[in-house]
Image 1 (cartoon, rainbow, N blue to C red):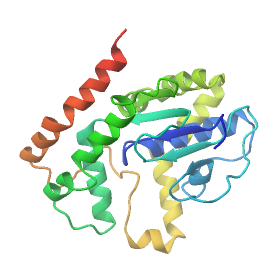
Image 2: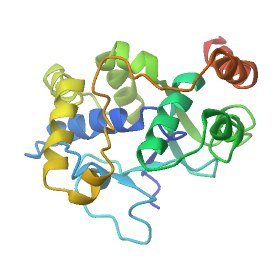
Image 3: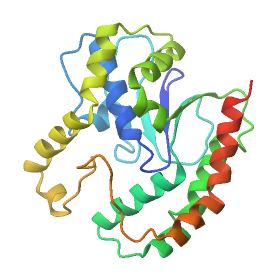
Length: 242
């Protein structure tokens, strides 16, 4: 770990891949590196610590700060953090759908009560944003819904914290690169030559504007809202406080 590395932290399926594409595209364009982020290269442009464990990071950047790393781990004493926050119900629906694609046969009720469900979501968010007492830690929270609604403004706000001024051209390039249609195209291209990925019939990027997830009955939705929504609301209130 270098002192100027930046860690992107999130509970799984909170939108960190979208954020990764935005940041990688902006940084490549800003550095005049003739590359674009793809499903093939994104995990070393934004280094996935789970996939790239025990490997030495490559040197890509020349703009003054270190590498971007991506992690789903709960809180640790990392110096520089961007935390991706998404509404708990949407996060858990997306995560359940993804696990089903990978072959997990849990029901929604089993998933929500299990080792990757409501309790772990609460623990993850609380560990970073509510119970965290490490005042020296630099944290910037970006909300998935805000990012999707206005990616250009959120990217500009992030860049300002990094101490970098991205041009309008760079921001436009990043927003286009991370656009849903482009990411679908990139995933389709990736799948064509990756038989391992293909066997799971994954669609990491949703195929329609809304993702339908079977099994989330009104009772299951109420369960999430009862336990996780208050934690989400507490974080939102802390962010909004003057």
